Image 1 (cartoon, rainbow, N blue to C red):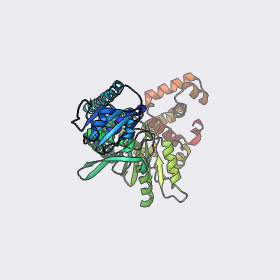
Image 2: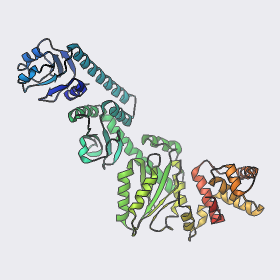
Image 3: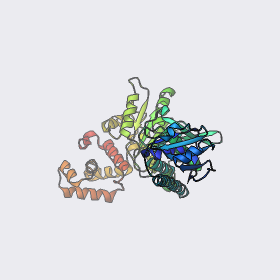
Image 4: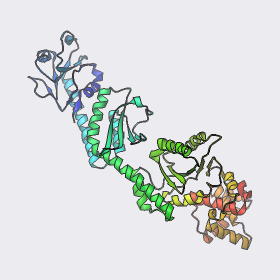
Length: 461
């Protein structure tokens, strides 16, 4: 690894270096000068006397000299050479050992970087390593300028903060870029020198990163669209492979937002905002006239997202936004979509969060909608049993879910003995097939029971 002169100066800051740099250079080696230097890329360590002799005799050479007595202030430095004058009074052996340590550390870093690339370490982890070990703050952007990854949270993005960038291309098409951000503690020349080395080593990995990300987003959008059209669930193993490329998992928490508007300008304003702020952690597609925005809630604070969207809906808004409850299996996205898509036509120009607005959901469903599409088939079986046997299975199940499946709390609210709740819930488990571990299923059950029984059960919410 070649080490720039700016890196050497930065690493020797504690020795009070005073550089006189007439040209940029990076060093592949160093030498204690005994005679006339030969290699331009060699950092030459020498005493003051030797330097004075070499000052006007060499071209494109760099010297590092210990000068605590300021002897070199009386010397006119040749414009053909570089000089790093060390003002601390230290032994020559100390300076040599420091230079050895610098080269060893950066060579170890180079080997670690190359080994990471060879072993398949992700680009994002390598960038985190660069910030931790070199202090380089870097952002990855897609072709539209959206932030995909940042290895430090020190800065928000401002154009003047970028001091150098590398665009990654596929032919003439830009895939994205890696940008180096200005640091308050490191010199700009040092940063650029290290960034240039970084980009040279990561060239192929950068291309693969953007190419893989682009393909993964496109494949996920296609898989979800195919599932929405056909109604067939997405293959869990196949979608898991695509999610891993995006650093997502199948078990992450997700929210689905449906967005419609009769005016293109209004909906485009929302879509542009979502793409700008949340593109890295979301998927966006259009199905049956509705924009479907799927956000990874493990990556995004959805409460903040919904608050921001509400602020964008003014009094005369012509947008309808419906946010689903959280669900923890992206392969179930078609089920979520079908469960809530019919509601979008019933709401006004507003944003409704189905995770919190239970009463609004009931008001929506009191409108002229076919309620049968919202009622879980297994809940219908329980309704039939209650009607035939005069039981309380539906109410018990509703209260049991509302009180987080606590037998004691459910018994107290129903005013029955705990053993009665144990008996009823066991019977429910025997009679119907309901996965109460799945939050989407629990929500579907609550909604179904409310549609059957009515709002009298809201007392348990």
